[in-house]
Length: 151
Image (cartoon, rainbow, N blue to C red; front, side):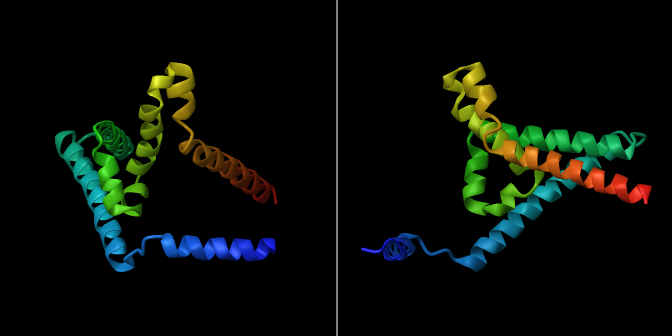
């Protein structure tokens, strides 16, 4: 049998076995949960502003991010964030809390392999490529910005 026919046959087999996604409800829940996470972040920011009115805006933003990252890591640790992610899909992944979850989940999963080869190595298995891509693209943009500034 031809390799192309085998690939097409296998692709059709997989397509028939995959569960059908209900797009509208999935989009709605992703939007609502992502919006709720952002509203919680705004509430934290407003609370910090109310408690410390003289605090600079940059510090308020930093404290808000730290609190959101902590909450997402904590909820990941007790198994709640994974259920939110299963329910909301991309709505829980897009905000900074999703990035926190992507670092905490592998760290929790591989902690039995030891501190160095489990926790430290596996912690960035999902988030590592994102960090590397972000750094590499920012360096590229910086070089372009520098060259354009010379012209």
